[in-house]
Amino acid sequence: MSTIGGSFDETILMNQLVKATEIGFDSRIKQQFIPQYDVINAIKAAQTASVQTSLSKRKDVAVEVQWENFCDIVAEACATDCTLGGTTSSTNVEEYDVTWCKEVNFSFDENDFYDNVFEMNVAKAFLKADKELTEAFAAYGVAQIEAFKGANVLTTGKGTVAGTETTIPSAYWTPAIVAYLNRVSIMNRFVNPIFLSGSLLWEQYQVAMANAANANGKGDANLWGSLQPFFDLFNIDTVNDPSLKAYLISMGSIAMGGKNINPDVPVVMFDMTKYTMVSQYTGLKYDVFYDNACSGTQKLHKHNYTIRLKADIWQNPAGCSATNTGILSFLCS
Image (cartoon, rainbow, N blue to C red; front, side, top):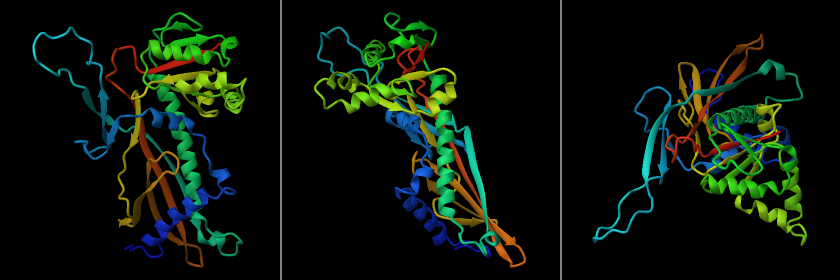
């Protein structure tokens, strides 16, 4: 139970999270709290690694990520004896620091609402914090994807390959380019590739999906069948400004996760209440810190909150070749 005078007890704190969830499902109100974060959805769709926050042997903020690879399973000459089996898949366990950290801080002073038509709405503040932290993490995700890009082995076709960048003239960015991207995926041995873009091909994709039911429009829609498209109109173009870019991401090439220091149920420690809340968007957990202090001549209270996200995005370190990272970058020229 809480022991701080004037603090919300555990039930009230948890009810605030429930109210935030209810507001998030209100179609009229939630629009102002919806973040732009499709890049995170793309990363989640490509993730096959298991992130274990409890297995790390280190006391500081670190996690273990278990990557499964099948690179050593290859075709061999037929055996002349009765031996069966052979090479197994490999599970690479890597320990990573969780380096990315952002927080949102806000306060509510009861004096401000003493003669105000509005009441303290902590639930809406939680939603706004969730939105801001989600968008900040999404922007970081684009930067990480950009840092993880590898070399394109397909050096013929519409794109000009130089280092880790494939540059394609703007005239080729039509629905037909999806056929080229499928060819790139095949030649680079990508598994269940994901196409991630900002504004590049967004309009063409929307038109293709709208015309999918029409006899003359099925072709463009069918081209997208072997790619999983994700469009983040805000973060991809903003992080790469002024360039317009798109990416191909192979399944299993990237992972994300976080680590918390607070318990799931509110506890009071040294005049501060600590607990966690789950993001409605990324599924990651936030550490929530709360305290209060006497305020004003009415001896009311000022309630202080910090919502912190400590998380990271990692690249599979054990790809099947040194240059094939499972992520390719395409630049519109």
